[in-house]
Amino acid sequence: MNQKLDILKQFKIPRSISTTNQKATLKKLNNQSMQTIVDKLPPIHPQPLQRIQTEQQDEQQCVKYVTAKTLAGQTNRKRLKINQDSLIIKKYLCNQIDWHLFGVFDGHGQNGHFVSRLISQQIPKILENKLLENRTSNANDIKQILINTYQQIENDLVDNSNIACNFSGSTAIITYLMGQKIYCANVGDSRAVFFYRSGDSWFNRALSFDHKPNKSIELKRILSQGGRVEQSFFDGKRQGAYRVWLPHDDVPGLAMSRSIGDLVAKQVGVIAEPEILRYKIPNNGFILIGSDGLWDKMDYESIQKILHNYYPPLNQIDVESAIQRILGETYTKWDQLDAARDDITIILIYVEI
Image 1: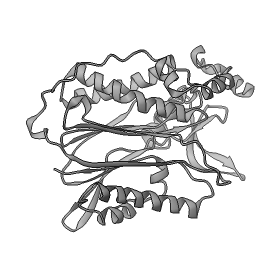
Image 2: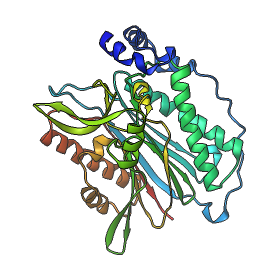
Image 3: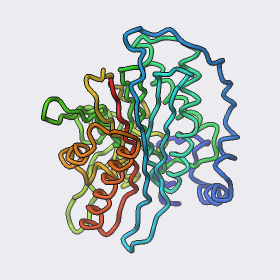
Image 4: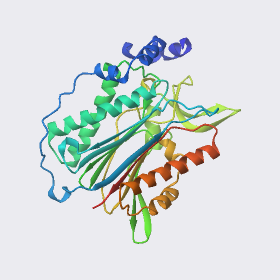
C-alpha cells in the first residue's frame, strides 16, 4: 500500500479518497450493514406521484413477463466468492403503467459489492425524482436526466458514503422503458440486447456497447489524460484484456474505460458518464441484460436457440424456464473452460406490442 501511495502522490487525489486508511475503512465497512451506508447519504425527498402526460402512441403496457437470476462466482480452488453483482427491477416507475426500470451492476475491487449495492438502491430513487421534477417525454431531456442521475450516483458514492473506492467500482447499465421506447444508459462492460423473431428468423439488436479501453474513442481520451492502455505482462509477454494503467506504474489495471467509482483510474481518463442509446421496440421479443459473467461465455446464437424454445412464452413459468436454461448453459461453459468463474447476473424481460 505504501508503494501505491508513493505512486499516486503526483495525481493529487483528494483527501476524501485518500488510500491511507483503506484497511481501517474496509474493516469498518465489514462491520456495518449496507443500510448504514445508505443512511449516511443525503435524503432524497420523493415527489408526489401522479400521471405524467406522454405521447399517446407510446402509452401501452409492453412488459408482459420479467424474471432475474444471479449466481456468485468461484475461485480457482472452487470456493464461492462474494457476489459483487447487484440488480434492480422497478416496474411502474413514477406510478406510470408503461414506465419500467431494469438494471445490472457488476462490482469489482475489494469493495465492489458495496459499490454495486449502493447503486442498485439509490438509482431508482434518484431517477424517479428527476423524472417527476422535469415532467418531460422529450428524448434529449430524458437523456440528460439519465446523465445527471449517473453523475449524482458518482457524487454520492465519493462524497457521502463510507465506501473506499480508489481501487473499487462497478459497471452500471439500466434500461428505462417508456411505452415502446427503450433508453439504455451504460458505463462499463455489462450489456443489454434485444432478441426478436421476424418470420422464421431470429435477430438481435445491441442496446449498449461495452466500454473497453482499447476502443478508439475511449483510448484517445485515456491517452490524452496521461493514462496507458496495455495488456498485463506475465509469462514473458503481454496478454489478456487491455487495461488502464497510470503512466509509470502498473496500477490500477482496470479492464474498462467507464465505471462508477475507481477514483484512481478517474485521474487518467476513465469516466462515469453513461453512453445512452434510444430504441423503439419493433416486434415482440426478449430484452436480456447481463453482467460480463454471462456475455463472456454465451454467444448470441446460443441464446437465441434457447429463447426459440419458449417463444412466445405462454406464462411466467416459460420465462423462468428460459432464464434457468441460459444460466445453466453459462454455468456449464464456465465449468468446462475455466477453473474460476465470474459472477453471473441476468434479467430477462418479455415485451409484447
